[in-house]
Length: 235
Image 1 (cartoon, rainbow, N blue to C red):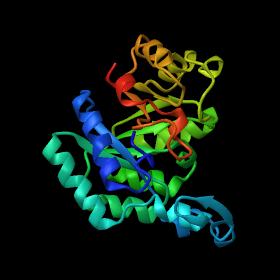
Image 2: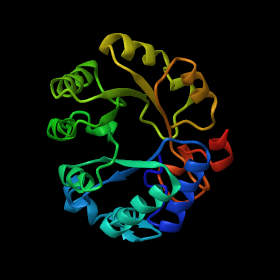
Image 3: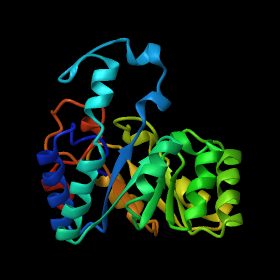
Image 4: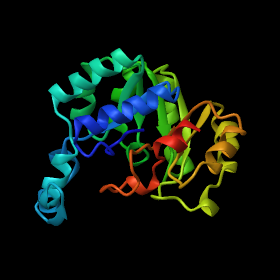
């Protein structure tokens, strides 16, 4: 996952795509938001100092790529022979992504209770990765039912939604629990520092592994500290 670790800079974005491609990844993932749908105006106008300005709006806007930039990402990934896709955080963003006909879809943990979005994604019929951080079993069951009714292929992803995640909170037994309870494939989306938990998850027969990547964990950004740098990701 590149997510927002590109910091709105296309050169950093392409460097991260290169790292993922050279490391043998199947795909890179981004995050897409219509900030005026996802956040309140009061929040967007509130103070936050960042490299992009002094409000939350400045920071959130600075992390979003526009249509031309996604066209550039689309072309660059084709040249590198790697798939790309994104987790949409609102209906407008999912509609935006549809024009690129990506191979995969992703439901972020925070979106698993957004039934309108789930139904829109499931209707596309593309293989969808569904993260399960912060959810209840009932939340997951409702999402699974939506995808099964739509006959849309999916897999759940065990996720702990802390950045970075402490090793003692990994709860990897949930991988088997999800597999047994919902009778589906299960992957792992990790936000920990280091690689040991990812190796352990791989030993539990996961069908996908997602890790945030960065060129430098010391860079500005909320996800950087929970990400893997190039050398570690290649391992």
